[in-house]
Image 1 (spheres, rainbow, N blue to C red):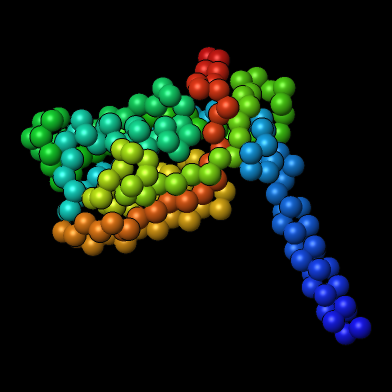
Image 2: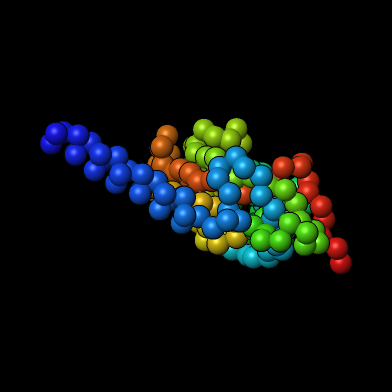
Length: 193
């Protein structure tokens, strides 16, 4: 009899925890994989890249950052402009000023609002081996982009870890794991102006 009570108590507690977890998500958030309504929100920001271990050309920074923005769910018309590289746009250097102009999705409570697109919460991973364009040595870049990523994208359960050591390249020095809100269509609708 004692065992049955403990089992029933444990089952009741587990059910309450599961119920509380599902209630904590708002109705517009949806569970992982369920389509929800979202709208594109314009983002503009700038940061200074200062690398000790990894050197980038302005062209290389633009390509890497744009690929990362798209992987995180930015719309395909994202623009990245790196300037101030010490030896021109194609010679690697330690620093550059990077301007970003892009759109990211935010959940929308109104499926009939203008410019609404269908989106889905999708598992996301960024590491030295994933996606293909990331590599060992990108730790400083991921570390310097933390605020841009965490404040400009719709992410759930974000786990952002960087362990950059100057002049050392490690195989597991950064990971970004989350669920990211991504459009179901390849481009989504452009906002009306």
